[in-house]
Length: 233
Image 1 (cartoon, rainbow, N blue to C red):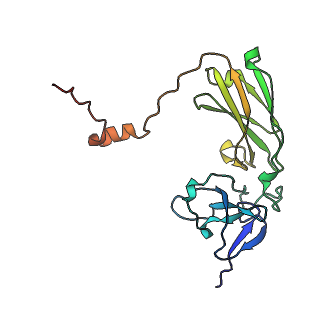
Image 2 (cartoon, rainbow, N blue to C red):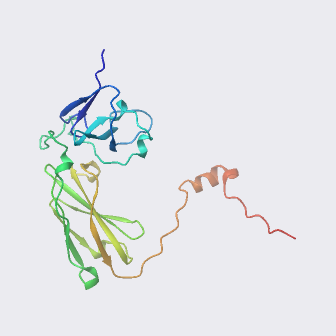
């Protein structure tokens, strides 16, 4: 079978419309990726490339990159699927659906002024039917505030009990299931802004190896190294 080169698609999924063909041994500029490479190429790994003054997507297995695939910054997401494996008909696959997710992010309300609720707005994405506003505390703890519209409320009582600067970010989803675990994220998170929360700023807890206790109890020889005695002159 003859190989004429890699097909360029408008988005990072075989369901998107193809727009061109890259010739064999063509040189391209890689802008981003979709997916992770773990054990093998499985159709989930894609590369975003500069193409004819715009961008396109190519299945990553067909491109040799100068750096490891997972070191390329993520810029795309997989299309959602119904139970039959098809992309829902509400999505226009003639263009990357996330290219249309643009607009203004706003916030009204101020916890520092005594408000107990602030309201945030964000652009709606055609085809998305639920949105999640992720609020990130100064030391990384996250809380989700979900909505089915382009507006969501963040209540002070639902945030971590610490003061400081919090960041809010938004992701659009599509789902046809009642359980949150079945939501399918459509685009990468976009940062809406920050807000201040009154109160003392908590000191972040130190990080630790999540497998430390496992190694300590199952491999005694790999546990913590005893502190050596002081040197005696």
